[in-house]
Length: 158
Image (tube, rainbow, N blue to C red; front, side, top):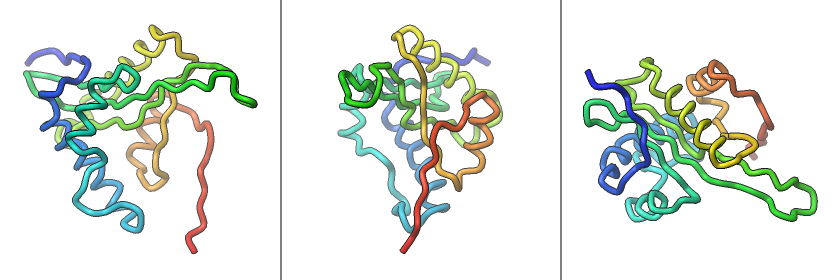
């Protein structure tokens, strides 16, 4: 078995990324059908081409034996000369997914550690992400790899 490698995504990865996007979206639509449409995905293929090509939105994929098994979508964020926020650089993980058939094999942790190293190399102060409260598997995973709650979003459904 080949060693796991992590690299920047390429346009040729889009079909596999699509499959993973559908898996993530299903978790969300199952938990919150009031917010997420069933059977869709977060990005169109045209949007993915733009995202993958943009250095401000790097996408990393984890690959083993020629097969993409996970991804991390990232966004560089910085508030420059903002009235109340400092100028720190943040790398925001917009989406992190491991193929449901490959979960438990430390691919998510490897992707996260790769993103941390990348962020350090970019001079980032922190790495952030959001997770839906109903996604208990993701919450548990993120806590286990050392993430701490930064802020909490709340809602009242009317």
